[in-house]
Image (cartoon, rainbow, N blue to C red):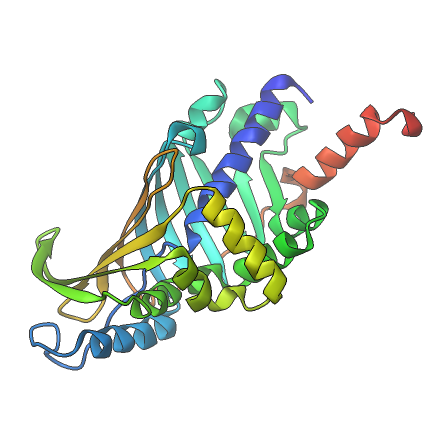
Length: 302
């Protein structure tokens, strides 16, 4: 495979990392009882109702902006539809990470179903890959190939629930010891109520049910590794409109390399998502490609 194709493969891995990394930063919705958005209903009551309504909605349209240090992909924008329970996604991503490969497309369509992600790498990729422009990435298989059992379980479990994260993020926010209502604000001209809270790393790991698959020792190791990275905690804000749905969610993480923020604007809850895998004849498997390169480089196989 050409150098440019390998660069595109690297770009696709970066994009996948962005998607998986921010999956837990997606918001759901909040639905207070009638009039609660305008009243002084207890914050936990409002956000608990939001959690339930979000889980029931199962999908929403989203515009997401991810801002991170250049080494982690820089600024990326994503537009499309996400579904949770089951996990589905049809998003288009553009941003600085795509500039890593000169002939990479200006934007990449990403679809996901059954824990497998497909990325449209554009006409240049098709020209070099016998007409195959879609890169298949089985993220669970990638984690398994790493040889790290904890990482495998965490990624697989995380992918199974990643698009349940709109509701899960609200559930995590409810665990914040300093959860509070900020007040009335307008988002895009729409009246909303603003809520915010924060969690330490230990509090987040304790509250995050997607990590229940890990053993006590694996959880301890994960906590140590996150702390070693310099991450100290997570700040979450949500703006809820008068219909009880979040118009926006903002999640921020501070680390030594720089702040990572995810700002997501939501609409059309419950609209539904239909995703079909690309035709096999237009798809190349990243894992198979990596295995082939590894075998070619191993003297024992030549």
